[in-house]
Amino acid sequence: MSWEVHIDWQGRTRLVGRLHTAERSVAVSFEYASEWLSDPASFSIDPTSLPLGPGPRHSAVLFGAFQDCGPDRWGRVLIERAVRKGVLATKPYRDTDYVVALEDASRLGALRFRASPQSPFVAASQGRLPPLVRLQALLRSSDAIHGETETASDLRFLLGAGSPLGGARPKSAVGLPDGRLALAKFPKPDDTRDIGAGEILALTLANQAGIDVAEHQLVRVGQKSVAVIIRFDRIGNARVPFLSGATLLGLPHDEPGAYTLLADAIRRFGDNVTNDLAELWRRLIFSLLASNYDDHLRNHGFLMRRAGRWSLSPAYDINPVPEIDRVRTWKTPVSEEQSEPSITGAIEVAPRFGLKEKEALSILREVCNAVAKWRVIARKLKMKATALEPYTTAFEHGLMTEARTMLRK
Image (cartoon, rainbow, N blue to C red; front, side, top):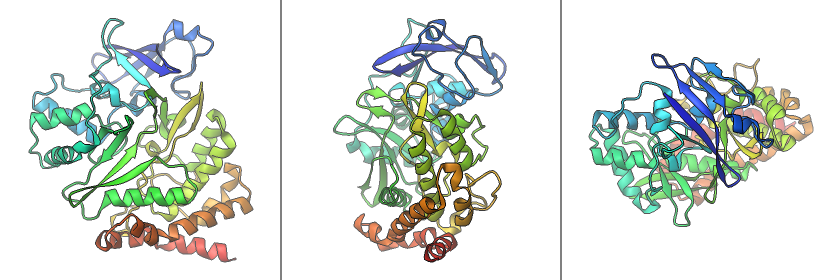
């Protein structure tokens, strides 16, 4: 199978190249279109794995730029269930099958796909995403998926909304009253804590700590919390190219990488390098102090603001995790040499982020002061005491103690 790959950039949709899939394996190849290569304003859509140049590029797995605009685990569940219920005719066998099954209007980033010059973009619709006022109906449908009681109608409803951002939790694209695109993240029936409220709390604290975060709001649907995150890969109706940290580093999405490696990638491919390096270190410190154990490379994003140059996207998917729910290891290590996270270790590698020790300590103080106000901010968000208490060990722990001790010296 072969797909034309297009990109929305500067008000135009242009052919970039062609993606080919092997008939009997998951191997793929991609070749830039000659008209794209001949344009002096062209750029690589994946600078590590698909550098700009003639000839095909081959890979045993789907290139990162295409994985980034494909569905997450929740989206894959929807697609697989839809095949079983007869909502979708074609069973997905390859990663590309999942990518092209997504709704075009809500696909992450600026890449678009079609089979031929005469065909529409795949999974195209009228762009009629469910409005924010349909959250109750979307939540009912997502609960049905979780309980395996979904109908074909539930699947059509949720599939039309797409689900491109990383994670296994139920979510849906929604349209805001002002026309902007947002992502609604729903609770699961078996949740033991208010994860939606926890994410909004973390994003609010991160913003207080001086971090550029995705615009967000907490919406109550009955007794449940829905985290609504405004999509940062859209400016009005214009799409903004997006890559994950894993793709910018050229790593498989299950490789942990390291913050220091992301810093190196910013130096190589970044636009506003000095500011982004300091911002990344600030995010590292916040993730340590706010127990962000959902901190993997697909949850670090980059937007192309200038042709071929990548800037940190607003921070997203920041989830404080209480001690009882933590996995064994941190998702993204501080550096290649550090297996266990520590504030001391983060200070030691601050020069990799262009920071002197005094500058790093100043950022540490700002972040520590913001995180320490977590109860105050939670009350302003009107989190109930019963929802708040499970997060105590996410914000009061050994790394906070280490930070406070270091700042008192």
